[in-house]
Structures are given as structure tokens and as C-alpha cells.
Amino acid sequence: MRKWKKPMITEVAVGCET
Amino acid sequence: MSVDLAASGLASIVPALPRGVRLRFDESRQQWFLLGPERVFEPDDTAAEILRLIDGTRSVEAIAQDLAGKFEADPAEIAADVMAFLRDLAGQRMIDL
Image (cartoon, rainbow over all chains, first blue to last red; front, side, top):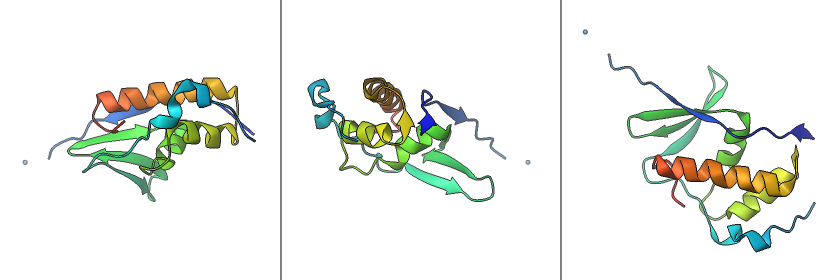
């Protein structure tokens, strides 16, 4: 059994490309 | 392993990915990503486990029960963490509750 960790989610900055 | 979470009301909440949001596994990075319109979220292992169980038919209760069979923790704690996580994502419009 794996140990439970609180779920976390991170917004990734999406860079715009000249 | 059967866990009684019925009293929590989570059986009636069925999360779904909104139109335009999808969960994708990036083979090159070996990482799950939740992709929305012009937005990208990177879930950790626990969050990815939850997201993979969201199919528009499973309730939060069913998802928490599934996870309680995989992880070592009080099922009520898992259910509470899952619900808080989904509410947070719903606030970002990345999940429909």
C-alpha cells in the first residue's frame, strides 16, 4: 500500500513564442 | 475493501472534465498534464490518480473508495482531500462538479 499524500496540482506557465 | 462513505453525500457528486479539458500523459516527460484552453496544469502522483478516475459516471464517493484500496490512509481523510482538490479545480473551471 502506498502512503497517501494530499493531491497537489500546479499551473504551468505557457510561454508564447519573434 | 469496502468503506462506508455514504453518509458524506459524496455519492451524488459526479465530477467530469468540462468540454475542452483533457488529461494527457506526455511520454517524453513521463508526466500527466491536465490541458485546458490555453492553460496547462501539472498534477502530482496523487492528483493524477484522482484525475484518471474521473469519467463522468463515477461519483466522488466511488473515486475515494477506489483510492482507499490503493493508499494507506483513513478513507474519510482521502474523501475529504479528494473533494477539496476537486473543488479547487472546479474553481479554476478545470472540472465540472
